[in-house]
Length: 63
Image (cartoon, rainbow, N blue to C red; front, side, top):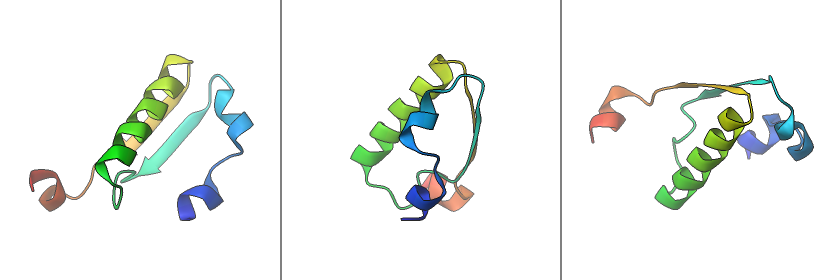
């Protein structure tokens, strides 16, 4: 729910030149949701936006 509360309205996602900062965006997501999130992040970058993410904790990344 936090992701929804802090995200801009969907119409705002199409603006070019925005910067999106995501802290461990895949934490707690199902693999199918991660695929969807990555597709959205790629679309944001492809349309001229910047996406910055922090990596998950190392223990989670190596599991």
